[in-house]
Image 1: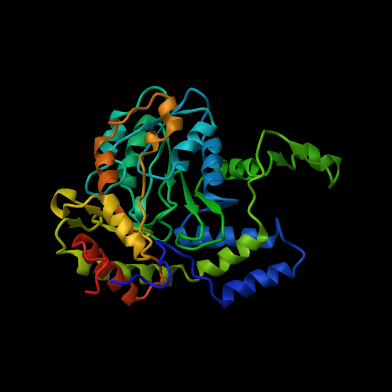
Image 2: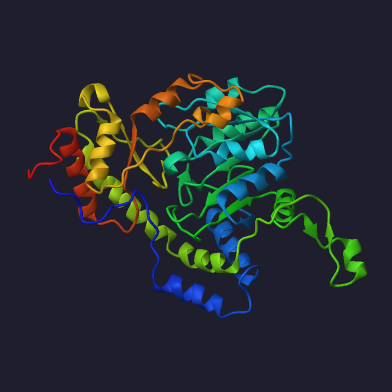
Length: 388
């Protein structure tokens, strides 16, 4: 079977003329870095998810770093998170000097297991960072109950889940702080960017301080004159630009239509794959509406008689941009050097060994999905290089 003419990526942004015009308008304005678009974008995100405040950052990792700062995480603290995530979910705690504790995932939801979270809490635990992996909301109500019992802060990593819902509420309205990412493959994009939403005015003020060098206009500064400011803490330059925010505000108008299209594509995938031997389609937790950032299947290699690597390489050779999400974070050399060992989270490691992400993004056509499934079937039958 011949390969596609061009690579079908696993994810991709959808930029239209309205988005381009929003950026061009900003380029013609007096503001390129910090300007009025940032506040408008923050308001659009906060309003959409039902949070009081939103603070925009240069990227999602910077936003997570800011959330850890606002939560007061320091050296000697412990932060619990999942190993099946991008490294930033754990690294943000390390930036503050805290130790990372990895809790295993639930085999059905592939998100962090609240029962294992509870078992990992010690006197040093300061925060929990659950991740809405693939856009599937974590069981945030159970996690919040655990956190309240032990007086912990919950920072929900919603990098994949803007637009998702849990028990009738939009993600972003339930945790102490929630991070959304606006990387090009995410639900909507600002090219690079991140946002923390919160209902806490205290966290809101700390987040704004942290993203801008720790500089603010204190009462003393106001007495000195309009030019005067003070640096009251050691912050970073993590500010979003007005160009990014202009794109983000335009993209937010399309979020619901993007979500609708993702769910249509998922329905096609699931119907076509449900009876393929050795392939397990992703499940969705009851009372949730996933953001479907990723469509990750699991491959039972005892049934398929082919390794995940063989299938991956066959699909890539046919220009189907499959991927694997994610390598358990504690397998990385940096974490191994800190003493983390393989076997720590067996369910997560089993997930990783079987996972394969198929292309999914709103700009895909129904025919693209059908082609992906057809080529996957051919890969399972060793017929990728035939004309059948």
